[in-house]
Image (cartoon, rainbow, N blue to C red; front, top):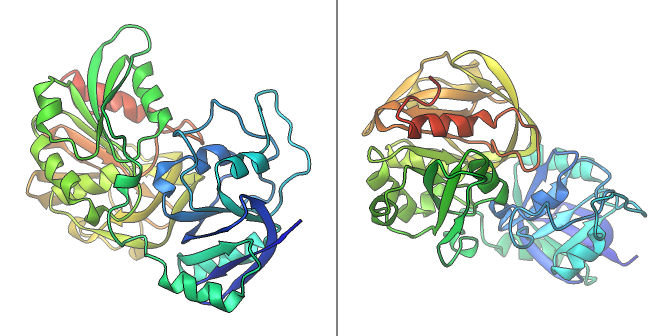
Length: 382
């Protein structure tokens, strides 16, 4: 196979073999700890602008299929794996990963020491990198990496949101009409809502709040998406106009935007949370769920009065906000960062992780039921 290089902005170099489309690409390099679900990872719009490293060594062993993508095409800037199996096999597969990446012009690299790479990112933090299959000099690639845009430079949502509204029908009888703001929404989110009787009107990210309100939506869903939430000022503005007027459920970027709308702050994590095996505690009853996560930013803990390095926060902790108290609901058990809060006075709640679990365990899907509880006029978890 053709040689390839991955070079990070600090000059750290990883040799490998070309995978997928021939060429070069740049982006923030992050690692994903999931053992399966590589097709869902590739097509998750939240990965726009990032080169994804899979920590599980064998990627591509069950091929690809037309049912599993989370959007219309791959969204990653590049793909890094340890080993591409010589043979793929699954009754659901319609093709192999190598050809899939080539067809969608995704530049990748295989035969990389992903353990060393992951440890380097974990120790030094996520950083920009370049993958090249063109025989370029490592020092020149490091220079290109240092010149590449940061994940915090500008608004990335515009590259992944839809351009026109669309309607995703309910499965069976329509019980609720939900407006979903598309900051990079995943297909499985829409499936989860549809299975609970929600007809979902999906709106482009810059849609004014007045549209779903005028349409009489029973509730509003605020989706995941890429980049720094501080650069999505229009989303914060429209959320402020929505909160208190209709039940709201946000995830991932939507969670961060809700925090900003309430006057809380966000910050960039050292290397983020990416994978399908992250433990989260639900504080109201101390139940632990294994969650799917994909984010590089988090809601600041300072307003809630605790320090993550000092241990897990207590149930009932709340921050005073311009929209009433924000009460903690979920916390990450790996690093004690905030994973969820509710604005009870506004009939709104949000979580940092992905309850639709595409891919991942189903532990968190009850959160869609919390949303329907709110739309029924009750409390989310009552």
